[in-house]
Image (cartoon, rainbow, N blue to C red; front, side):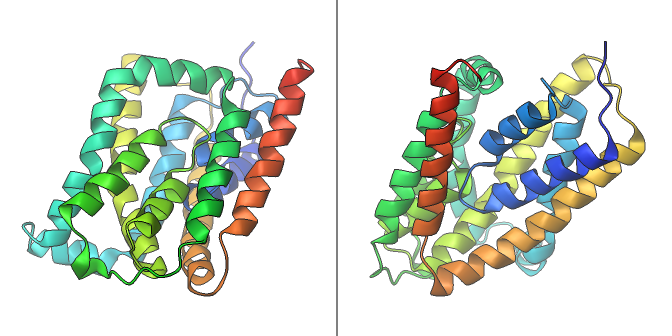
Length: 263
């Protein structure tokens, strides 16, 4: 029997997607847990696509001036760096799409991935002497950060967490690391939407109401906007270690549930 998603469930899934897409704690991993909590094996590919459109809208609004600049000058250095930084994820995604799709559905590696995310965040937060600004980012920096983004195809390795950490490893200052990470999310999220759309139109539309779709999309956009603003503030004045502790606790909880066969 088809389980129809309620507006409340759509709202909370949008909240989870919006917050965790840009906070360094993994949106895919949290959405998996959110579906488990609501008793949903799958909330529907159509809803997944709309949730990602919501977070894409959030980052487009925040970086609208930069996007206008790129559209007016497509050969700007930032355009080139974003293209270079996106290539590793495209290669990994195309070569291992089926494998990562399978582990995302089972969540078998979820706990360990949360633990790894925490370790990377903790270690990167100790690097505080970076001084590179956007104009100082090199091709090597973009490839390095893009490679970390490609690794985040694992469901509970945080894309924003790994790319911000990679920026810090390459001596970008904290604000620039976040800026480049969030800007790099635009082609990553857009590419994910295209892949989901391809699968969506090859299959059938799920039983989900238009109102629930709208609720989930708006929720994802609003909380995504909030998460970006919050994360930029945190990186200016606070430590990433609080996020490391959070994902360690969550990862330990998931591993415990899996050990007892509860999840």
